[in-house]
Amino acid sequence: MLELQAKLADPTIYADKDKFLTVEQDYKKASEENARLEKQYEEVFSLLMELEEKN
Image (cartoon, rainbow, N blue to C red):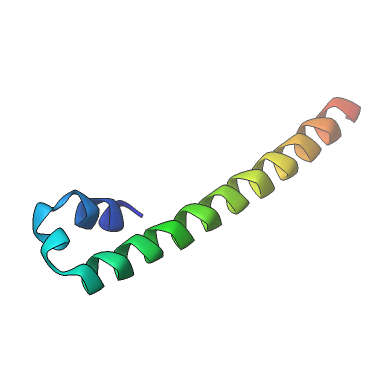
């Protein structure tokens, strides 16, 4: 994700439309996957907290 952010921060990427669109699409996919994983983490963490409260 950081690599994609760095690529998007590089002004030279905007000179190549195809390259920019590819990186932008990759960044969007990575962001969506990150959001999905964060939600999954939060759900698992909540379950863990519930189990710890029971013990």
